[in-house]
Image 1 (cartoon, rainbow, N blue to C red):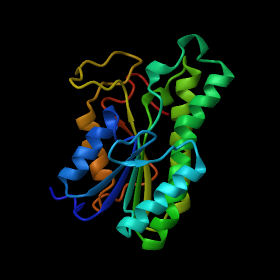
Image 2 (image 1 turned 180 degrees about the vertical axis):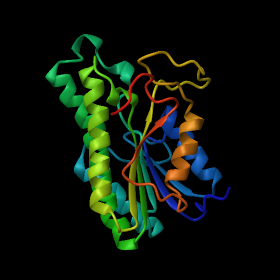
Image 3 (image 1 turned 135 degrees about the horizontal axis):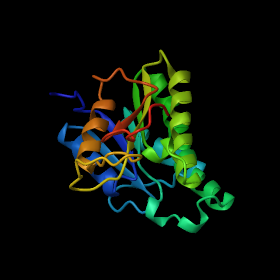
Image 4 (image 1 turned 60 degrees about the vertical axis):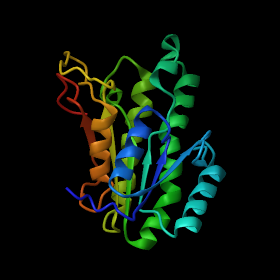
Length: 225
């Protein structure tokens, strides 16, 4: 299927990471011009999603260079393994994680949406996580659930403008995911599987907006969330 991404300009924030790099490859396979952005971008551009000025400067640079910005994918966030398991309810850690993931997404989306609205087209996708649907880890729950809530608010505000906003919610991500799904846990998925979904969501073929979509089996035993 041709996703009609040829000639489109796609920004992937955190594009050098485990999931982000797969998204970059997939979008490029579809013919998109992909800009990789992170705090240490290598051959990409510098963008610190925790800093408003850095975000605005990066968006302006992309538009100046390419004349457009069709899609933004935000994967940037400290890995869950870097969180201190002894501080999952510590307000300081919760606040830091919230800023580095949820507010990072909001900063990038806020900078991109005016450009997209003016063009009458845009696709924004955030990578959240299935901890959003579970208790027992306040840090993980808050940073992921808040991202989903932010995205839904942005999607509703952009309704009718040609701009869509969604999140994808993987469980555990492995190169070779297990097909087994334990009770109370989400199913595993691979970076490639996540990238396939994201590629569709950023394409002109997708009319989906305001959704949080599980990648892999949504938490087994949970009905709502």
